Amino acid sequence: MAEKTILRALAGETQDVPPIWMMRQAGRYLPEYRATRAKAGDFLSLCYNSDLATEVTLQPIRRYGFDAAILFADILLVPQALGADLWFVTGEGPRLSTITSQAELEQLRPVADIHETLSPIYQTVRNLSQELPRDITLIGFAGAPWTVATYMIAGRGTPDQGPAHALKQENKPVFEALLDRVTEATIEYLSAQIEAGAEVVKLFDSWAGSLKDKDFEKYSRDPAARIVTELKRRHPGIPVIAFPRGAGDKYIGFARATGADCVAVDETVSPEWVAKHLQPDSCVQGNLKSSHMVTGGDAMISETRHIVEALRNGPHIFNLGHGITPDADPDNVQRMIDAIRG
Ligand code: CP3
Image 1 (cartoon, protein in one colour):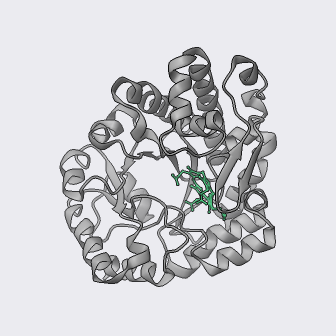
Image 2 (cartoon, rainbow, N blue to C red):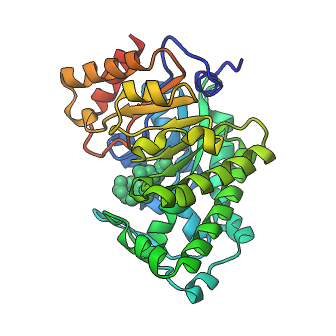
């Protein structure tokens, strides 16, 4: 059995104390992150500066001793590597040039060329695999094709992914060709991260919840299955965490259908439900509501203990249901960890 707690959970081991990490653990709620980001100038410059990206990845490990470090990068670097323009508007979020026609699709770069843009990210992974303490697991990641495509089609984040749903209705061939292109790029990107030293990879399908029935199967589940299958063919034994956020009932069977070793769950499902319906199939990760990191207090402690208790009879990695927000109190993170580790 592997000695790292996260790898043990992913291999199906039930542990007395679950290993812990947090989505967006390197981020604006930490003063040391804000200082390094200021040094880099802006968010994208930070992502592409391997030394500074290594530094911010390590900051939450030093401060809290999490069991895993997640590569500091962003899911939207893949569209940029495929040739889309990408920039971030302060206080608003990402903006991209849009792809909604065959002509625009044809202007994208071939998948084989993405490494040119993404090579600094692989350098960050190599740095981290040298510098991380031996007992800490290094997680690489990418956005899932549907979620990445929603940004490429709309040119920004959208509350209901309306533009992507519209393209799926109005021009299915372009929509499906775009999803295919992103799927192939994601396989190459994650494969390169694994070669550089990522020990686990996570696929973020943040907008999976807006896909209904057959669309969920075709555009969230099936691309995830294709990515997991190909990664495991190339890198036998590589553990994969899938996060089809907002899937609800469709979380059931997702690990089995895709081959993922762990399914990450958001806070809309109860830990008892997760224990009953998901944990028999695979390791589970989650699912404390991120707002507890802002509000803290007894409610945070009791909900943290509730999740640990409900998931104690199977493999579990403690995490939030979504990323920690910039207004979180760093002391609440320590209190949460203390409540778990006793
Ligand atoms: O989890 C981690 O700490 C690893 C790094 C990471 C980031 N983004 C850094 C980041 C990861 C895994 C992501 C994933 C990501 N990025 C997702 C999927 C997960 C999710 O949150 O649903 C999505 C949808 C994106 C796209 C994205 N990046 C948006 C919509 C934004 C703006 C919103 C915001 O929080 O400001 C980003 C920016 C971003 N990515 C920041 C960080 C730390 C904040 C940038 C800053 O410092 O100003």
